[in-house]
Length: 239
Image 1 (spheres, rainbow, N blue to C red):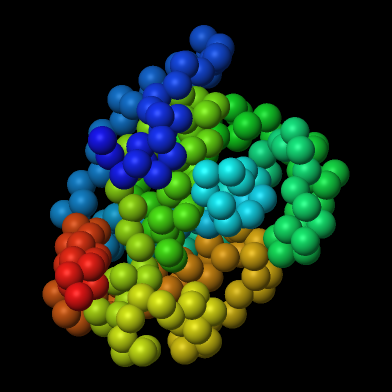
Image 2: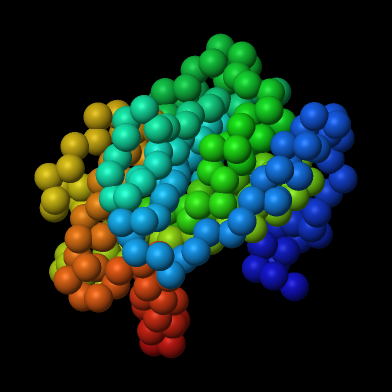
């Protein structure tokens, strides 16, 4: 039993999705893509930095509302290489929730069909390693939506900068540092906080900082970042 099944119960298993032939073809093409070579240097890697907005923080009950993503290719940000989607909601989230992410009721009810939005996300991501800050939430919400609408697991490698950055820089020395604290520490501006694509841009700039710090310590590939994350998680859990 994997951790997603433990978290979400039997619903975490693959569900039968009602996909058209064209939609099935999109999934098939994605499955046939070669896996990313995680041993390649950062300079030769395409990362996709992800952030989500949801109807709340309960990963079992709340719904994915939007996904924002931006690619970091060969260490560089291309502001034209981004992805953002608001998934159509059958039930609009609460007023208090809307005040956080700014996606109003009309935008939610008039959003993109979830099947099409998630398929577009698959096509944008390809098999690139995904990066987020406190990635567990983003990974869980996207994974739950993928199972619900597409009947599939997003078998993608994630890197959580909350675990990686403390290996290179001293800011209280733990993973409980908020994203905003790191952004202030490095003077990174986030134009629109709690907007998925804006948060993804800010996190991508943190990834650039992490790559520069990693180069100085010999952490020169996605695989090296994953090893750092695994090691720091192990040390944290063993105390």
